[in-house]
Image 1 (tube, rainbow, N blue to C red):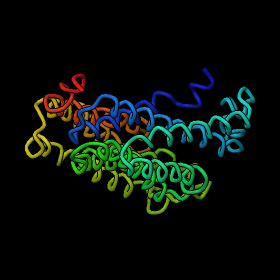
Image 2: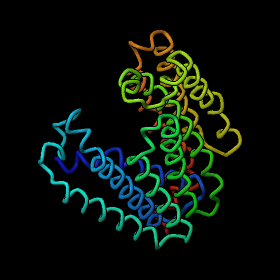
Image 3: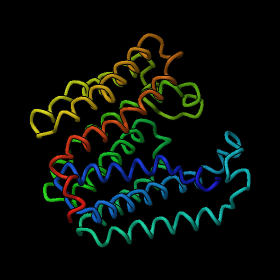
Image 4: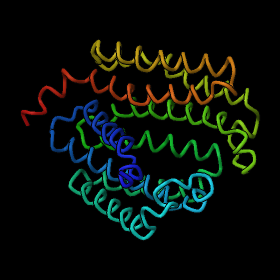
Length: 282
């Protein structure tokens, strides 16, 4: 269980699903390509989680001593070896995909390391890196499909949702970030402006969410999933944090986990008649 906790296998599986979504939306038709994309993306996601714990071990000794590394239940050398094996396996699997895919994997791996090492302490630039990685994993799937440009749309949705949520998380952690001189938007210009900026970003997603149905040939499953699973949670989370940022920031960021997954599911389901029905015929 300690290893599963360090790998954060649930979060990593969502990363794998993001790659499948990008592939499916872009006209991908081969189940083995989809599985390779998902597995390689999941492995790199697990690598990012492990390397984050490795680089944060001294901080976690103080703030989260119960975690597997600072508690000693998993040794630091074992964690480093695990991270290296995950990285190698993720890159190796990507090598059998189109040549641009390994390039994306290497860039993403570098960004994951840089984020855990230095960038996340910079505040808003760290928010951008995390959002960019979310965009990249969707496009990674699309690059193995016939029409990769279509993956940019769900990739943009992922970028915006993650960015808005990260800004809200800065509101949630404002006191701790201020003490540690982490330059989030909430620390730099204040809680209320941060809430406004985060809300505007998230409401951009709500405003554009019908467009794929009308302009990308998505089916009705997309429209229903996007409204119930993306738009509605965003509206609820935003109303709560606007009413009382200090009281509801934690609740709002947890609610926003729903559109992170449901946005991917909406695009996936919206592409089923065109793509998924013939996966098993290839």
